[in-house]
Image (cartoon, rainbow, N blue to C red; front, side, top):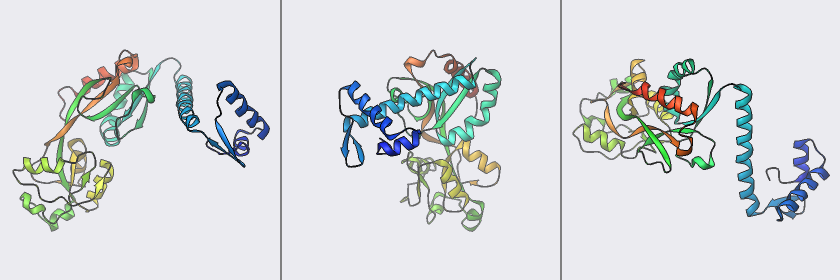
Length: 279
């Protein structure tokens, strides 16, 4: 399906073209359906074959991942975790060493996802999710509420002092796709009306943070990101800090995996990590 011809597939698999053709025909005979329409030298998969191919690909990926996990950690278990990029790199990753030291038999595999997905169609044991506890057919552990701080580059602040919300007029207010009401909430917490929002739109906090550092506008960042940049002098806060955001961070897992030992250990560790912690 990917290469479009038996000749190209044969070269990639280091087989003869006749062998690949025979294998395709054998599979079609086994399934009782045609998988490809022959157009001159190309094989065009039918619509049913495309759906079948997606399912087979997921199954092969699962087999490959399970094999890799077994080879790297035959005596323990593995936890496949979907993470949000900024949360994973700035909050979770610096703390993972503690978990791994306490659970040396567990391997954690991380992959980023910006939006929720269907656990049944993926190979993840759990996910870090932002929003509400509304993931269908899943259990939730609330980690902490998101709190936001507006940040600006020191060079921009020196040229454009901000002592009142009106002083933001004329500055670009950087926006994140998944937080469409964030600036409205921030201005309300400052006791001010929301002006027209003009500024670049981003899909991740990491790129928005770098844009703010480069002086391209004011960024509204979660405190666990803002605190690092402020402490290291790349950004400085604007007016009242730590405004309540529009949701919380959650650990989410499919109900069927609730008792999986690596997940149970990670869930317990994470609950202890966030208990009573200021983030």
